[in-house]
Every structure is written in C-alpha cells, then in structure tokens.
Amino acid sequence: MNAVTHEDLIEVIELDGAEWLSFRVLPIDVAIIRGTTADEFGNISMEHEPAILEPLAMALAAHASGGLVLAEVKRLVRRGSLHPQAVKVPGILVDGVVVNPGAWQIYGEERYNSVFSGETKAPHIPPPPIEISGRMVVARRAAMELFPGAVINIGFGISDGVPVVAAQEGLVEDLTFTIEQGTIGGAPQRGRAVAAQINPEAIIDQLSQFSLYQGGGLDLAFLSFAQVDQEGNVNVSKFGGKLAGCGGFIDISENAKRVVFGALFSQASAVRVENGAVEVVSRGSFTKFPERVEQVTFNGPRALRRGQPVIYVTERAVFGLGSRGVEVLEIAPGCDLERDVLAGMGFRPAISASLRTMPPEVFRPTTMCLRRRWAVQPESCSIPSL
Image (cartoon, rainbow, N blue to C red; front, side):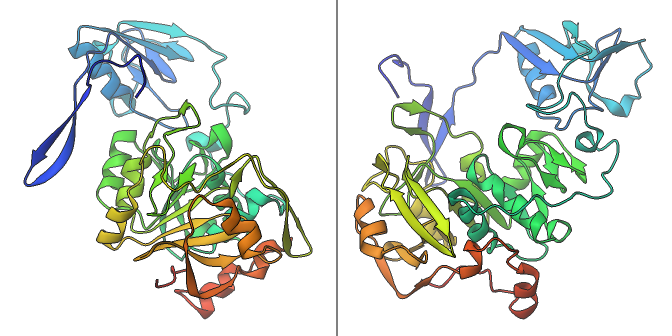
C-alpha cells in the first residue's frame, strides 16, 4: 500500500476452485465502546443510542486477546437494575467505565433526540425544501431508480441526498432505507450523521446488518464513487494520495441486486443549473473517469459476468455498464456530449444507440412526481438494457 507497510497482512488462498482473501486475525489490546447506561458491575445498555454498531464483538475480541475493554456511558445505575434483554455487553467483558453525562448522541446534532433512538416517533417529518444544485441533480436522477417496496442501502457522500428526494416526493413510507451501522426503516440523516435515522423501525447490530447485505437482502444500493474506468471498475478506497479505505463498500456493492453509483463528473468542477439546463462553468482539476482506476474497490467485469445491473450517475451524464464496458446512456440538457463529457474522460466510452436526454424534471425546482411514474410504469425505474 505504501513504503511503510512491509508485512503482508492478507493472503490469497484458493477454496473450491476460487480465489479468496484471507485476513490475518490481529490481537486487540484495547477496545473503546459506547453505551447509554452501565450498572455497577459493568453491564452496558444502549437505549439512547441511534445505532448499536458492534460493541459486543469488539469486547469479545479484546477480552480473548487479554486486552482491556473500556466503555463510555451517560449514567451509572445499581447492579441488577438493567433488564437482562437490554444488556448489549455483559459486565464480565468490561474492565472500566467512564461516565460522561453530556455525551453527544450523534455528530453535529443536539445532545439527545429521542426520534433517533426509537424512544419516541416524530409525528410528521416536514420535507426539506427542493434545492437544484449539481449534487442534488445527481441525487434526483439517482432517486428515479427507486421502486415501491425496495430495501435500500444509502452510502456516505453524495448518495445521502436520495432519502431527501424520497421525502420531498412523499415516498419514505413506501421504501425501507437501511444504513450499514444497523438501522432499518425511517429517514436517514445526512453527512457525518448518516448512521442515524428518524423513526427507525429496527436497530440491529452492525454484524447482523452485514449478514443481511451479504445474503442478498438489498434490492438497491446507492453509493458514491471517486473514480470509474473504461471497464466499469470503481475506486473509492485509494486515490489522489489519500487512503480512504473501503469500509462496507465491498460487501454492499458486491451483493446488492442493483447498484447506482453517484458523483459529480469532475473533481473541483463547477456547474450552474438554471432554466432546466446544466452549464459547465469550470472543467475541474482532474477526471473521475481515468483509463484505469488507481485501486479496484468494485469489479466491473465481475458484475457484468454476474448480470448485476449497474449505472453511474453524474450531473452531466448517466452511464451504464454493458458488454462494451462503460456506455453513455443519457446526457444532461445544456451539455454538449463531446465538449462537456467525452473531453473530460481518460477513455472514450461506448455511446448508446438510444442515447437520450436526462429526464427534464430532474433539473426543475419542483417535485418529480415519482409516485405517478410508479403508477404508470411500475418498472419505469429499471436500468435500460444495454
């Protein structure tokens, strides 16, 4: 990965005729976990938390390694006063407790909001005002892939605008949004607070959420991308000298029935969206569509072999993954294909024989009437055949 990493931590092995990555088990010296309440013995409950995450697995790993388990909580109560079904980490695994009554519930919000933990339900969630910007154009076009009853994952980044569009369209209760940290149902938040959902229907541990994902439980995944190459490979983990890591991206993207990747077309570019059209103001410092990605976090050819539908949404154009690799399917009104799209790519993609303009309602500051689209064409959000 870099000049400092001399030791191989991962080994390629063959199992049942296929190659797999075997990760070495590393000893855990200290696990720092978070809960709401601890009793005098160290039993931990999580009734005010917006997500359970994986504190039990962390505590077990550290305990098995002979390491320490330290828990931050908001309050301390008498031993035995916690209901046993509420205890998420038993005291036999906890070595120390730090009581912090002013602990924040999530990043950048009020210290505690009961609608995130499920203690109460918000009677009505007012939809946010409609904003037409480059980022929201991506989210609005991506949201056209939604369909009734879909089980969805929302990834960190530009894709967190999709639930905003769903709320504006009055569709939140017709869909099930999930976040990898363990929330199911409700309305996901944005930015660093994306792990929390207003009015979640279930909050499970993160390991179980990934079992759902790995088992094919997602109908749709909305994920961001940093780079896409001519074969449809996606990089989100290592680019421009930054090592962002892959997080849960691989588990989610590999196993979702359909994947919608989204990003602004070019790094540091600027567009103006006015009168239902896109004007490219500045071209950007470097392309997000190089000939080869710096690191493969999602394998395009593998997705193609498996028949997994994939599209890539930007504010200037929509691309699909087909037998010819990446293919231009749609172009934004106001954009010139050669000047504003192809000239900014490190490879020349295939051009769909049925190339069309992106839906005009995406660029207007009104609702897109997605429910009406569902009623007229239940499969109108399906990805075009390539």
